[in-house]
Length: 145
Image (tube, rainbow, N blue to C red; front, top):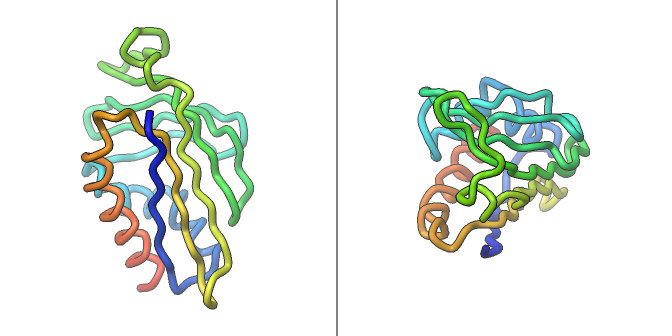
């Protein structure tokens, strides 16, 4: 597992960036960088189960480890969803289960610095290095329009 970090400076207040990250409509918009049709099923509250799904219903099952509005969100990935069946016990998912995806929002230069720290299986680093900068650009564009 490797630790990766992605950052972007956004000319918008933290509260607006937070809403863009987690509001259903804008979440679906910025996550097209990963997969068109992506959506999340959750209430974004600490301890809540979260399903990150694509158009075909496959995706990831996770848990909100911590949520401090307009400040910090930590998502713990637990497994995957295939054919609408959750898998949290197979050898495949146990290799990365428990990995974290952390979003930190800080006041910076009259706007917001968004920092995303993630644990990434080594064989996915190149893919994420291609996708995350696009996702960050999407978040910035949505927040600044």
